[in-house]
Image (cartoon, rainbow, N blue to C red):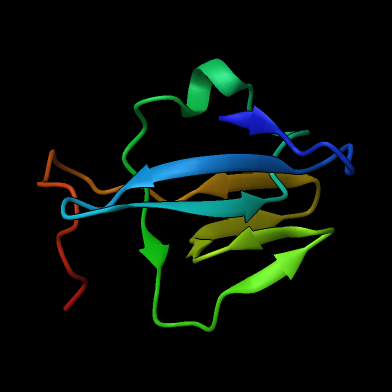
Length: 87
């Protein structure tokens, strides 16, 4: 997890998808610290076109819920292999 060089609210997150590692750009900086994100199992959508966000390519999008002033990343209930598919 790294800070985005051109955005105060964005993190650059490397995600181990099992067979490869992708990078996502996520606007969760005001809600999570780097330490909270490292090693966290998350749900990532990868069936989207890669998109540049403030000059950095993102290859997916994490799943999160919002409620008023909170953002909560949705995580698997139990431990699961990296790269497992949602069905």
